[in-house]
Length: 285
Image 1 (cartoon, rainbow, N blue to C red):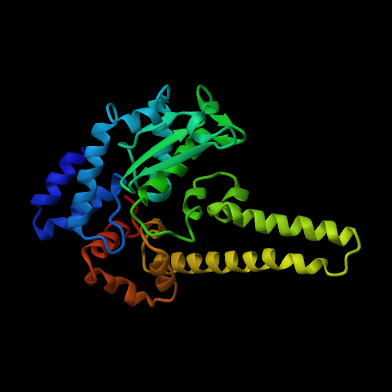
Image 2: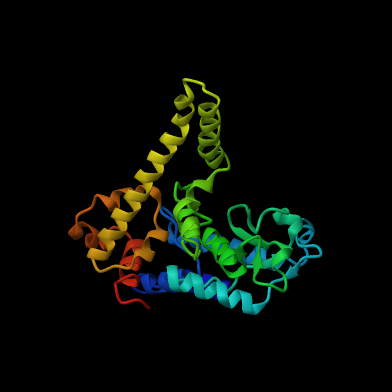
């Protein structure tokens, strides 16, 4: 499939590119911000090469040694989640069960090889059952697929925001983005815990320990308000909010401040925007 896309990209005439980019988007091959069609073609070609080397490359075979592939049933459930929420189905991505890669306390992990080849591992605890430590197997796989779709994107303050949106748990959807960096929840919950302990101990300056938690809370509120504002602008422009997954932070922030007429004029900015505005018109495909 990937090789077919590469060949189509190399031979496509300009008028066919928006439609072809839409097909790629459907399959989880997102054109990243500032990425040209030529660069996308090269990335997909390298991805195809990487996937072909999986059975024989020593480093890759070491990663997947004794790891069982996940079932097609689980894959189908994950595809359905990413399709319903973000309108893509990543049927090509390799996925295995391997607690050796995830660690005991992690439900799933995405390994990125050269920011080109994504490999997903789910905890062995999911093997043969749909739940592990309160996590749903399909939601966990969909979560990692969303990360994989943005493999070529710059680092984002919304790294976990999108992935956690496939969770049925309202708590995970609300606070999941705080876990995009390991130290953020440590600062937030640690500050609250220590402040409460010092208050109980009668220390008069206990509130000083709340500062990191308060600052993090304010930042998260700002981030959520910006992306909600961007989503509302898309909705008012007759566009599906799933488009947000394809944007960088700077594009999300700019969109949150844009006028409706400015949004529709973006189709003249690039092939990428022409494809996005066409694909995500309000009638969902």
